[in-house]
Length: 173
Image (cartoon, rainbow, N blue to C red; front, side):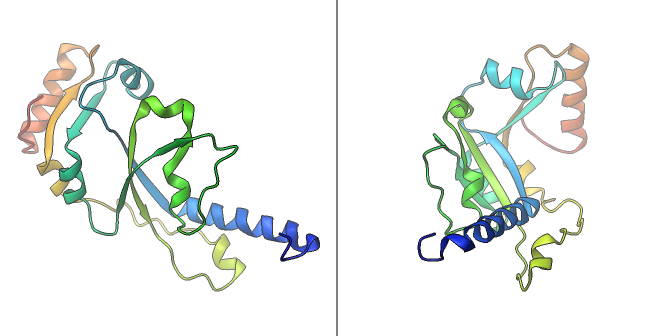
């Protein structure tokens, strides 16, 4: 800020916040738990009740199943009060979380739509709804298995098994 002058500081801060919001509105994430074993904490936090499933895929297969323009990275767990997040890439901010989330061992697939910015109005514009952006069956073909939540009733297990058969997802349930 010393190079820009104290009087410009509020404008620069407001501009940075506007750009961060612009990036957030144009970013889609798919979050994955990077572990070879199940976690009771993850089922409890993200399972949303007894009727939950988790899909398992190897990291290399996940990368191969995603389009090239989708970024895949491990989340970094830092003290965000003291960690500087690079401004080099508009996607960097989406790969950091507070340290107390480290148990998640998260990997994120990120898709970001960044049209050219010509004015402040462009920064405020909404991303038109294009529907589902990634609808590729390569992801389904690469699955290792589908796991039904540990407290799911038998009928739910049967429904998941039937859906996998119907949609030709040939993996163990």
